Length: 181
Image 1: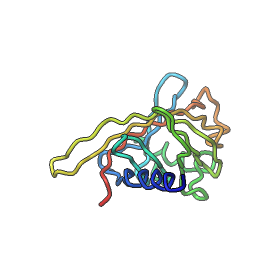
Image 2: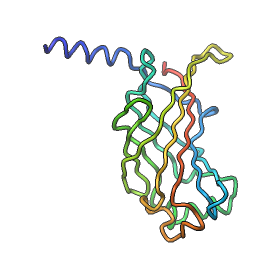
Image 3: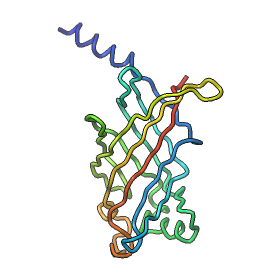
């Protein structure tokens, strides 16, 4: 029995491959409603992730991501400066947002999301978009993640009324990555 368990463990590691993000073709974004009627999108420009991918089953075995909060970009400098203040992301004290995968189940990954030193469980719908070779011959894999969080659960803009900025924030992440060499 012990040899069988060791064999299963070895097979799991043998089929797992660590991925490297292609940051030119990856987007770490979010969408919130303004006044309850208009979608306002933003993204983070500085991030990294460790993705353990099983290319035999096309599944993610492990995922950890770190996002530099001060890299927020909503294409509005005044709004971005406001979002870095204490009431929102407090970038003087809080440097990063962290996600650590805790499990998966048929198109869903579960994990712990830490924003402003508050950690909450989250669920992200996950789609494996496929694999292709780029023009230099590098094999690229693509994934999409979508999920919803409540900003006030993480003390982000807690004093801003939801009529002005929605409490619900959609996380929208599109990843293109290659196997690490």
